[in-house]
Image 1 (cartoon, rainbow, N blue to C red):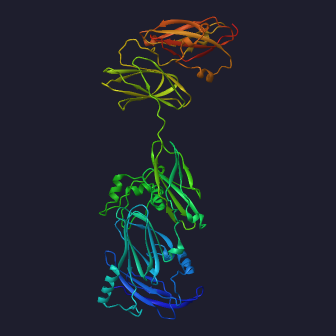
Image 2: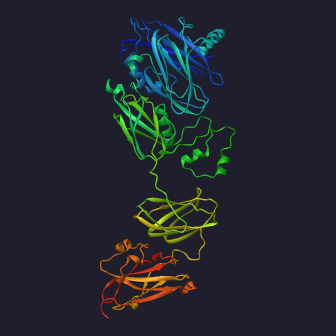
Image 3: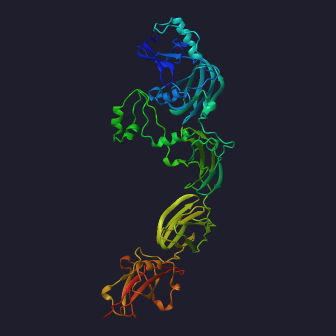
Length: 622
């Protein structure tokens, strides 16, 4: 039983000229909520009604005292706008309150499986009523019920308790009420009535999936309020252009901004999962990645996830030992990546191009009309689209045992396909990167066999498989275009098409052996017998490393050189790699001149590889 005592005084509201009632010094040993919203004529109250509600699992009583009045001569039900504005600015009245103000949107939070009740008062009969509930990040169950106010009041305001049987009878009436509307889902849903009786309206809400945010708007003047921007006759979002990385959206403007002159802007939300039915649902998902940590429910244990957010370093053993409890902790859901959902507000434009999208990816697009003055919003009918695929490149077919020339643009790539006709045990792959380093990937029937960077000539041995097909991807350099020679074969052969090369393909010049007409150089060989050809070319003194690099095409063989530049060709090899080095003295040079020297290693099939070029300068005086 909820008993209370209070001091009641009356005064005249100077701004409104209306008698008002003030209750102070409320004393009650129980949990009592006193709501005072009274306007009356003379000194008599039209209604004085006390209700007792069973609240919570421990049966705490909730006494709700409503003091309501009628303004004489008022024929049509309207809201006192001045009083409303004063009340809505009073945070102490509506902050974390169970009272829904007339004509304002409030935000709330529900814990999972924990119902919450909100109350709204209609003072007069035949009053229009509109209640709108917006679920944010989870479906909600909600119902609206009416408890009519009795004409006769019981008790004289003295705080004396009512008979128990009368309290029980009122309790049953309040709890059951008259159900007006119910809904379950995540759509923005409204209850609208053109004529409603006076009384206390109860909105009960429940989230069964997870903790959730929501918004509620209730008004007794729906015709004049128009809190949400109005949608056009065609509320769909259209896709006017579709590319590999861009999508252009267009929609019809809201009449709220065009005809009524209210400040309206449009916000576009892009994500890869689904369309959103409200802006607060999109913002809830965006804020889930930005939020520091949600406040824990009273009695809830902290978890290692919480401590990690606070920045503490801990060990699991110490944490488990220090936080042992028989209570069940509420789990946190995985947070989406910030890049997975984007919100862009673009002002009053109704055409927008989304850029920096990924090719061949499905995206969902939503547009919301937002009233900048009230921050209320309305969702257009969203759409979705898959961006176009990257342009498919032509795959080059490799023939068994034949060398193919491949050109790749800067940062580009090429695909080669090798499909042996006969069964095979292994595949030998030769890759000759003529310029810069090239990345090579080989897949057999979709399975990755190798992925390496190749510089110069490389040979790979791949395990074969009957009827297998090989896909070779070559990715070019960031520095510039790339040229390659590629050969794939299943035929075992002792003679390789490309010459074998040492790991070090530099040419060494001996400074002490330089003369006015000659220069002595050396280079490394291998255990395989190769043909080496030496060429020289006179260059200017300004010839630098950058120009030399541009001419360092290892695939350009001796056939591209002038006959006058040829010095000699000879065969060389050594069974001992430690001694596989050869020297050569180049004569017939002019004093004080700079020469570019090149050495070509020529394979059995005529394919050649050029060593790194060397600049030498003869002595001017001897």
